[in-house]
Length: 499
Image (cartoon, rainbow, N blue to C red; front, side):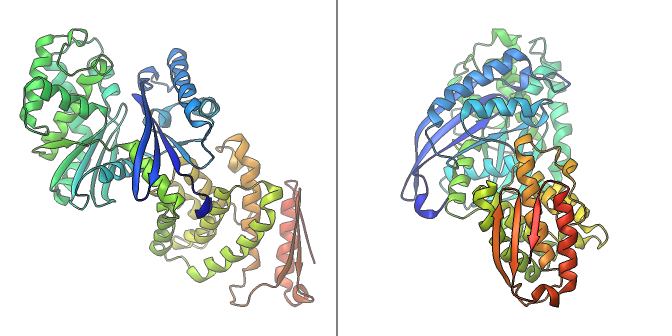
């Protein structure tokens, strides 16, 4: 999307494990004004069985919610809406089918993001919501299926972790019968402490000057503490949390909870959330935590606006990886320049979107990243690095596609490697890989002389390349490589002609 066509209105949808949130925002100079917001308690995580199968009634409830969201979002253009799925969607066994139905309901694509990317976006949302974003902060967000911990300064996270514990999952496991007993809370807090143990030392060593809490769970607990008169000072303390736990135990059962400020929607999962929060206070020695209105969805909005202003964190991630793994930047730029010409020529007939061209450019920048491990099979090493590295800004499907493009840039063009990708993306990725392979091939000599590619003609099923007169005769190795590549393309229904 070009700068002069940037939308004034954008939207973010957070498909959380407990609730679904949508915000619509409008840019007003440097300010972001929220013009609409919707929230529905879907409890997706509560409908997931141990095998990762989603209960049909919960699925219907979720899709009905998304239909209502979709009514508001369908008029917004492609690229102005970002929809992210979190822990439960990461665990869902039949996720592709659900995603297809969700996208049909919303009218926009859905991304599943990794835990650390979720943490980064949460921090971004909180940082934009506080008065002094420069102070080093510990940010905590208790979701339905996971809890994120971040230490950051300004808009940048310094440490980020996502742990497999949430208010829904912990309530189901430790308070399944609804009984609120000292024993049940002790078991839940011990479990949370065990989950926290791997991050405690590094987080406490890093330190922070303030602690901030995001998400409905923390906001709900703060509201109850204030409304109950447990602690009228701003923020939460461990003493206040212990007092709230004692009151909940006095009520004896989740169904009997009658606490000021506690909504009917939040009541069924509050016990698991409180146990996690107490364990975090104790493990990290948090003195006082202040709730924040910023959260994942606000972070998504700010991240999306950054992309539209060409301040994309994904580009910074790619540059960082190139430097970290000592990728030959000069060779990468040669490949990128030729690939850009091929993409520009093929884009219309081959149906490439703007994000496809962007993804190819990133793949070209990192296509030799595997050389940092070994020359033999370096394309496989590159796929491994990009599959498992922490890539801030990237959704899981985006990361998977980037890794596959690097894997397919040389040797056999194997369509079976694309099986993990959604059906509609496979033919597009195959053609993207074909163009990347061609750009790499043309610069195999690694010389600074430009390749005299004078003509690029796109056909529905292939390409025709025209080189300067006698150039191919003077470069027999390139001609031989092109002939081999032509045979490879033909095996997959693509034609490559050159002269």
